[in-house]
Length: 328
Image: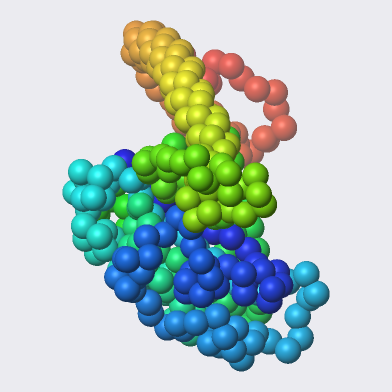
């Protein structure tokens, strides 16, 4: 059961507005249970208009036309981790969502967290957080938080260590080439099986006459969700394959590294044996070397004595008398 965090970049007010209307349940939400909407929990802005107002007040006047205005984070876990599916986490993740929100505040700063919503009216509980990607020096830069594989990998590591690990969840395979599912697609993947809508003869007759009954609309929506789910299932299967391939690559690299380490250890052992042999040879030659050094030092002393004696002779220019040099 995995700890899951996804990020979606919004570059326009209209994009944020569409997302917010879904988050705040200001439009019909087919994959939500209307009888449980009251159980949803909100922090910060609690409506689309309120959110957009807070966002505009926070954004700098001067910014690039293609700048990311808002990051939408979606935090959840594998469905089986929650108690409603037999897991160990309660509806609020036993503090998992609270830890995730604290982690986002530490990452982005309290003032840049506009709104947080925990949805409990869908099949799998999840947290949605809207964040202004403002840097510490006052720049609007989503790249600093989401730019590049290394930053994303570090983000996943940090989130897992701070939020996933303390709650008994696993991290996704580091190094996997699986692509992240978009937040919009991921909502569909959170849904579990639901009972099929049965259509009666009157529903088909009404449709033939150009009128869609409530049952027909429900069946149509369900068919659409099933088609979307099939697409997401294919994406998830590809992700699992990529994770398995990543494990194979890790095992292969580990084996190769082990072989290299073993070869290096053997090389070091050979060098050490060679050094030992050299030390043994030097140890045997040490007495001869000591004798030669002593003779050399004695020769230097005698030469100095002879030169001193010659310098004191009345006729120093005479030829060298070898008989004056003592035998070594």
